[in-house]
Image: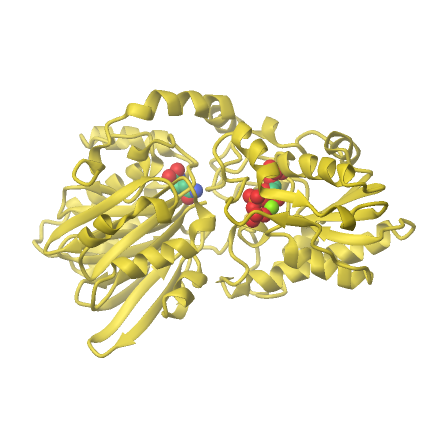
Length: 504
Ligand SMILES: O=P(O)(O)OC[C@H]1O[C@H](OP(=O)(O)OP(=O)(O)O)[C@H](O)[C@@H]1O
Ligand SMILES: NC(=O)CC[C@H](N)C(=O)O
Ligand SMILES: [Mg+2]
């Protein structure tokens, strides 16, 4: 998952965008970038690394201007090379810079289409394709200045061509900032404002927490298919640009990706996780009524709220049996399995007294590759646990994700083609229990019953964009399994870092 932010302000926005990106860091740890508009030119800094490492004082000083966009990246397409860090830039028309959260499912077709238009895409990134599509549509207008109608027509045309998931923010030199969400609203996008003496400032971001952190007030979520256009002098326009929008947000945002203090599509992530705990706690009581569990222990960090609620439901003590190293990021979104594996032990350490001689129930939000659960169970046993049971607040993840979460290969998923007993045996648990999908859906719907359907393909294999067939999944497996990614990253390590040349 990536994080995006965009601001049209009344004074310098560099620090505000930086601060917002630090609060969205949990959505992408591979690369970060900011572009601002200053005196009719883009100022850009992007590179691999965490926000605090990418932007030094000298970069921040160059990022002048009252409007800009930012991105934190977790790659789901192309490579991890710094030349694929975002925002991307294209010089015509006007000069456009774009940042994207999500993943396109018809990138190959779109590339061909762009080639026919004699547009060059310099990387293997789907986001650069998206930028060129938008640019190509804006190119059709012959006016010197864009109106909101030109912008909205261009977004409508992009919607027609593009399949997959996308929340997008783009800056157009001399014109304004445009943000839009795919017609299913798979990825989140929220709009907010801040009143100043000079006038209203507007901001869009992946999560509401980014607005909270920098003192902006949340106005509303951007609707599926809707576009927001804010001119550089601060006029806000909005329009529905999709022909047949429907609201099908990604449920994994609530399970794992988003911060608990965010509200996405009017459903609090924290409250949804507590509800997941209540429902899973009830299931454990029903199905494991004869088990002798002494204590409930979360696997930090995302599962803590869920585990606390399970303990409450089951009337059992809740103990923080694992201490998290606060200087290590999320392991699941790291690029390779070797690194992910090594990081679990560097990140989490057991407190012996909480395990010795006890039957423990470990709780996690989800089990994806099983990297975390396998090692954590081993650590619990080394710390002296008698029995180790495992509960997952999400159902078994059996199908690839094609909408912005890097789970492209079913063979890398521990639950693919396996039942609970086999999974328990592999990770070394004495018993394992998963949330039912209906309960997971209701846990979030409890917070916003207007959401009729969620994007749940990783659990049930149903892809809302209808263009995902076995041939596409096979293509993705070949392209993005861990080995293929590692090879590609080595090859592209020296790729032309076209957009970074002026700010090393
Ligand atoms: O089965 P796996 O492939 O290990 O993936 C699942 C684990 O990865 C995530 O944790 P992560 O360390 O990324 O982040 P967190 O600290 O927010 O829990 C998630 O919360 C699970 O613990
Ligand atoms: N996780 C994401 O949103 C990734 C965005 C884009 N597909 C990239 O790989 O850069
Ligand atoms: Mg975790």
